Length: 298
Image (cartoon, rainbow, N blue to C red; front, top):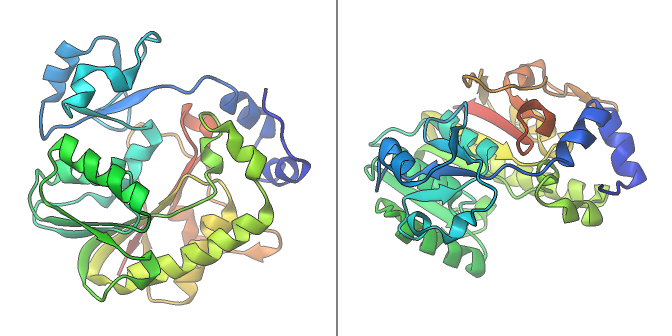
């Protein structure tokens, strides 16, 4: 069983049913993969890899129920036929809904789970700028793009908040975050948890989302997501964007996905009621990572 810091328990009891949350994150994490349709069809992969169960909200997503399999060692993984990706992590790209002729920026792309997903959805057409800041992460991004056969992508290395003034049709900002939604598979996150870290991350996220929004074409879409459950990194960041721009939130609907209400007040601060349109996903909702997703239109 995980050990929780007193401050963590205090905050999360005010946000959700802590008993349900604690039970969910102490369950074994489910292995999941996404079929890479640039190289193989869903039906063909199902014929090659046994023990697959559909992820309800992603037609290319599957849980692997066979416990004896080291998924990354399968031949089909080396061939780029699938990408090992947590089921909730597949949601932001689905919401972004890339079209084949779009120019897309993935502001914080490494190691490439969502970039490769977007590339497959675009059928290697249009163009993706995949940006990140750390060389070791860039290496992983480059290797995953090559393994998956994603050909419509250029890699750049900039701080997200300092990206050059280029206009895009769609932008994904899967922001660097505290990762408190990933405790089921990364329990060590609890050891480094502190509220000062959360505040610093929130400041960076606000700078990045303001920059991302400025890079959108009129009518363009920005999807903001985190694997954090902290309101300061989620609703608070969206509230800041709404206060400081003409951004509009779009209502999100994902079939077969269970969601919880967004937080509209936290530690004495009230957020814009439009934030109800965002997705807040707790681990106990779908036996998955926790996630927050917002769809923003310029």
